[in-house]
Length: 227
Image 1: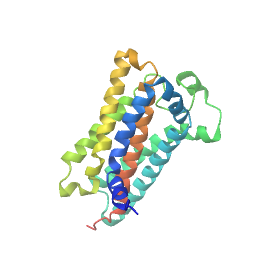
Image 2: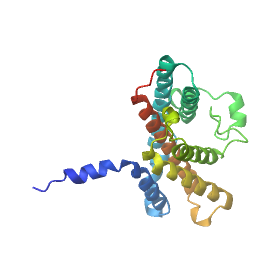
Image 3: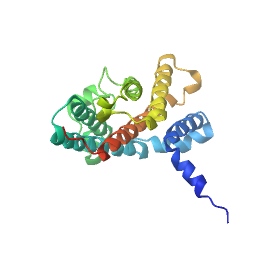
Image 4: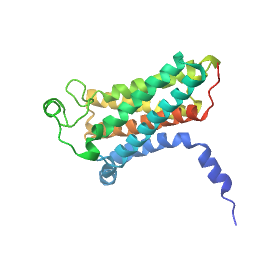
């Protein structure tokens, strides 16, 4: 019988390219009238993509706080430890925003302020007037910051917050996808009236959460050096 183990091992070895490939497949599928109907149910409010985004972001934030705490015990508060605290809290906010701070699960009534000022009339900050629709710029900042961290902070003194090189494909996908989504929003390409730009933003949000999880997971598993 043929041995498929080397082929399976090779696929597993290059897992970091899967999100990039899936993003291209998603874009092509959204441009097809026959395939779009199969994709949209996955993108619905509180659907599989949103829940996966919440899960990755929440676990990343929790593990980030645990990692920062372990490092604080080992060598006190340092710049890199402070960064991990801030990063973990930031990604926790992303997770809670994704479920409208619990409203998606507990279905509590929306306060009057959010009814009047929130584009979706739910308890989220990123949908408030003046902020709604600007998420693509946040994804762009995340992607660029990750790329800067990947290439500019490989020195040993930045080891505690170093960005793994295996996240390069994900960071490039987020950065280029955000630029595409921003451009689509500005120029309103007629070929993308299917809502590709809006739905692509949800995919990018998933990749941001996944990247944050993989980044924190790598540091969570490493043992902090005692000062």
